[in-house]
Structures are given as C-alpha cells and as structure tokens.
Image 1 (cartoon, rainbow, N blue to C red):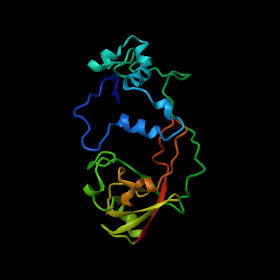
Image 2: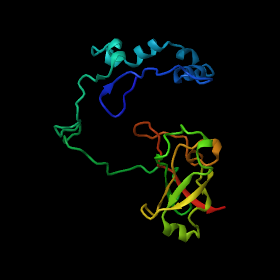
Image 3: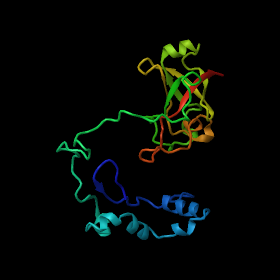
Image 4: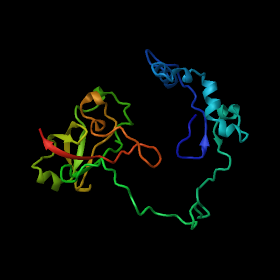
Length: 223
C-alpha cells in the first residue's frame, strides 16, 4: 500500500515479476526475519499483513477490495490541515518550541567545527545507483572562506571525520552555503568508502522516533 505526504491510501501493483536473482521486498524481509528469534511472528501471507496493517481503515468501513481497486481517501482526513487555524494546544494556537535538550553525545564545535548536512542528491534517489554508476568519491560542498582557512582547494580529496568514523570525499567550493556547514549527499553505499553513514550514529530521535540525520558534527583534513 502507498501513502506518502497526502491523505490517500492506494495499492502498489506489481508491474513485472522479479528479474534474475532479485526478490520482492516482502520476500526479503520474510527471509531476514527467519534469522531472528521473532521470525515466526513474521510468517504471514501478503493478505494477512494487509489485513493487519489496514485494520484502522477496515474499522472505518474501507474494504481491502476498495484499496486494491485504487486510491481511497482516509475517512475524516481534511484536504488541507488546519484550515480552521485551530491547533490541539491549550491556547488553540500554533506553539513554537522554545526549549531544546541538547544531546550529551554531540561533539564540541572546537574539535568538530562543521555541521554535517546529509541531504538528497539530484543525481540519484536514496542508494538505488550502484557504486559503478557513481563517481569514486562523493562530492561535498564547503564555503570558499572555510576552505581557505584549511588551505584546501576546489577538487581536492579530503577526509571527513566525526567522533564515530571517517570517510573520503572530493571537495567543491560553494559560496552560496553556510560557512559552518558541510553538504554531504546521502545515498552512497558503505562499501564505496565514501558514505555519510560512516560518520553518523545508529540512534533514533526522542521526538517521533525517527532518524536524527543532522545531529553530527565533523571536521575536514587534507589527505
């Protein structure tokens, strides 16, 4: 089922059968689960999983047949949130956060002066491109003034270091970005030796239980 950034749920229908040695995501996760103690809990059919995952919709009168036929709008979901300008807060108004708990694991700015921004690339999506289809080193961007402080030139090979690990990259000067930030495109494979994942921790955020992508500070050194 597909639902992302909107209030509709719909089917992801198979276009072609798996080619060669490829397998569907469903089969991959089933096979991986078999290697863990919770493996038996994952042994369900596609229909069983869909019934379980769509239970909230089924309770509201939506059927699996409708979902397979095409997109279904979520019952009760507004087309545009908060058009009435009322929020679930004591005042009924939107409230900005004013206090932030700085994680104790964050590195010092003295040792790691740059904030790592592992953003999406316009050249590829996630990690779908193989290493053979990408440049040997990831191209990262830094402000020219910062490069001058470090005696680094455009196109130079550098080592990016955090208190978790290090990786190689190729430098590109970019005067349009912040001086305290390093732009490092995400999606490179770990085995390429030039991946942002070599610099970040395997942790989740306290709010939302998501990935804290921008909690890493780094420094840059010439090679």
